[in-house]
Image (tube, rainbow, N blue to C red; front, side, top):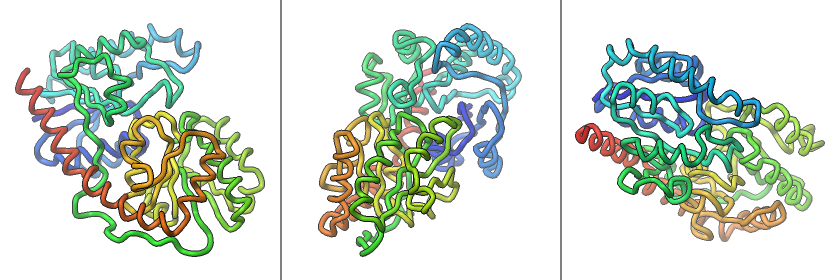
Length: 376
């Protein structure tokens, strides 16, 4: 089966890590090619795997403000031109399937309709609530696209019942991201060591992820526990937001109590430093980093919203909170008691190794691929 994958960016954040995991897991079951808008870390990773990459100029279908909203017709025209210009690639590669790795990719849908090729959209985000952007086509337009696409994969039940509530049930598939291989995980639960506690918040630095709430909560916790520290892991093109977070952290940055690490390629080095992972996003589609933390035995505190409660079971493998730095600080106190900590670490390992394996993820996605190519 020849599959043309499309990703709208090249950094190795959650969606692209999941794409690489899918490609690795499917192995010889498919013959892949990947379309990207530019070269970057993802294209380098694909080249190392000897997976062909084609760089082509295309645009996502979302806007952030009125300046980008007025460019909707121009973006659509450019995407139509890109779909036409890709005819040699389509004719030479002859894909059996087109696979858009995100809901913000217009090109996959246009190629599907132009060349009559089955199409999958993998929906990994609440773009309005999480990234503060809007679809060019609006809710009605996107529902039309989803209902005229061969299959729509949601990363969580929250996405399937929320963002995709108007989509035909026969087209929808809930498939959790696979983070680890069945025989590649930390099998020993952690014990809370006396002394300094290190908290971490990880991801693309964006307003929807509420990094500022974590910093505010940490300041409350740090006042009682001056030996504690916080790692803020991730980067962003939003310079104003990064500057605001550093200003909020204030003097704690200068002392190294709060550390902004930027983008980190080897995340194992981060998880090995952490005692507790925190996710503050109110609309996280699933939360890959939460599952990764469980893989390393790191208990998590998460906001009770989006797909996070599908990973964190309150008082079973972690803690949930309902919003605000004050409540989060209370949960931070609670999770760093020995009675809870080891239980959450142990149960989190069980969750990661039974619910979110790469083997299960790839098997289910491949089954959807086979189904729609056979029907077409």
